Length: 330
Ligand code: SAM
Ligand code: DTB
Ligand code: SF4
Image (cartoon, protein in one colour):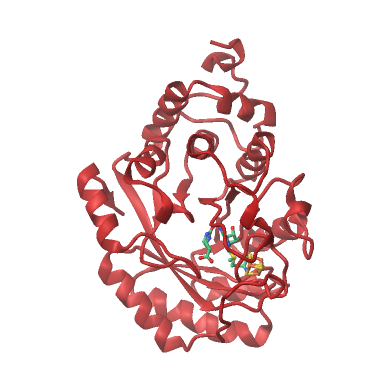
């Protein structure tokens, strides 16, 4: 075994606790990626089991409350007005429809309801109905999450006052690769919004997309950026690119399944107490591939037949997988 990978020689990392926040270096995470897969999964399992019940999976249901027509040019996204996709635009959904969907998600066994809007950021007038959605979804006894793009001064406080638990804002890809994917905002803009969310006292959901033609070093650098936030995001969605025809990333080639599993393991080891979510791309994964991701430390998923604009495994398939694996929802 490479000496740098001996647990006691991995600077400031302990198997049971992981590194203190702000301590990971890209070379260390690259070294995790280079471990034999069995050793990597073993380490991920050790970290996972020190902090979580390994048979429990958190389930969040997603809904797109405002679809398409976004001003941003994110190269993977069906909802960018600049990408020539088949998607039909939809205005902000009525609050009552969103609340009915949340109740249905709760009845099917979701614990969190995530509402997404295709905005660069919300206008103040758009925020009011979203605040009402948050209040009413929370009143159903669900955890609440929204993803609305960049927040301006005072907006995070309004969301927190409405009772929002989590704000999703992904770093998406490493700083070095970011300009190859998005030009209408910077990764620093994303950090600024995450800072606003933290200042307002909410939990952060932030992760990224794998399979956009980035290098392994880029993937390791993204994990380091997430892990070194102080504190690390409570929820870390790892999305496998859904190749959407008409988007620049549609032809990027994706990523090998085992490299995706390694990324999950790297997230688990570097962010020991975070929920690592096996996110977009699950519909195209076999049950066995999903199981490898759970073994590598994923303990959260999107649950329900749709993500925002694309498909997700239907609830019956997920329930059957949970039964086969003896997994329990939380
Ligand atoms: N507009 C807001 C924003 O950008 O934060 C919220 C919605 S945006 C669609 C939420 C996240 O979905 C993105 O940050 C990205 O990580 C993920 N996403 C979008 N399209 C995807 C795709 N084709 N494959 C995988 N993940 C995708
Ligand atoms: C996240 O990281 N993934 C979700 C959620 N946060 C908002 C979105 C996935 C979108 C996949 C493509 C689509 O359905 O449009
Ligand atoms: Fe707009 Fe978000 Fe899609 Fe980017 S990822 S185009 S900001 S909806």
